[in-house]
Length: 426
Image 1: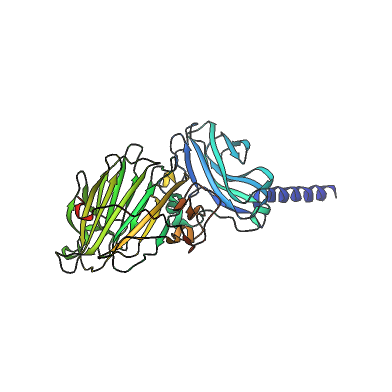
Image 2: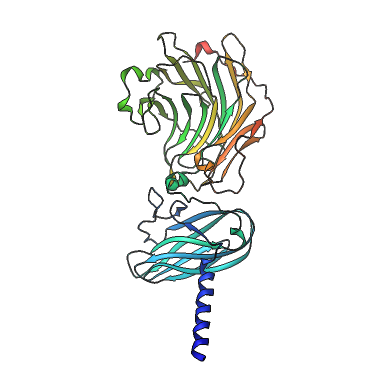
């Protein structure tokens, strides 16, 4: 009899322990792949979000997930290791030092937190010591408790391991006040500290391309203007001659070349050390090409506040197109997946449009949209709206608020009409 009692007690203890380690019906498994960044020290995450060569104590890995309701949180960890290691784990102001032993897909319970607010949660991992080549491979975080009763959100689809780490792209589509618009003018300001590497602050978007400014590295920034070819391909070498976007002219220091990978066409860019906290003026002209039948001409200028002069970026002509400015919009994106954990923000204000024979008319209404990464609820850190009389877009950084898709925003008119002699533009 004593043997059976001991056996039953052992089975009960094993079951209770397994549930405590994240095996209840409400347990949610958050994979590290697609949800993790190297936030300090040497990089240990590859392009597809997988943990690789985690062997430096200076490396800090940060994994993010979002809980949709407040309440208690039970934290566990699943790992695989080839040798013994000591690892420090931090989450919500609590620290845990755990020992990894040689094992495959082993679960360790970290602790329980009674009150957790709704929104994004960050968990940090830092290796302390190891007897082998690396600290091991963390497979996933297991979460349980009241916070999992509503759907937690994180990158959970393999197709989004790359795109989820880039973060959601956000857009504002503008309502133009007249037809056959030829000119679009916009003023763009990036707040100080909101310009991490990988940012593209796109100011003057149109149906066939875009014009804005980028942060390409710690030492290089660009102004970029691109026009897609009407031929649908990601390989520019496949574009027939009669569907190539042509270069009419370009400004000093501008490179004009073919691009691909997201559709194909012609891109025009120049290295330009623009600064956060400074307002830049963007101007685009789109008309049926007067010199080529069946083409439309796209020309872009940037106003340099350092010398108070307009700079020509380039003029391109697109075949099989006969139109004026259409689908006016701005967008904000991160094109570098290593920096999707850092927030960025941009303001668009005092924007105007002009049709032939008419005066400038102010643009004051915009519609907020986002990309498939946000629609699939892989990332929920996106916002748009009106602030201080200007439209704004914000993304990445794992802030907890988000803006409803399709929200309409109206800013108050500023009445500061552009003072540009259009006939004397370079």
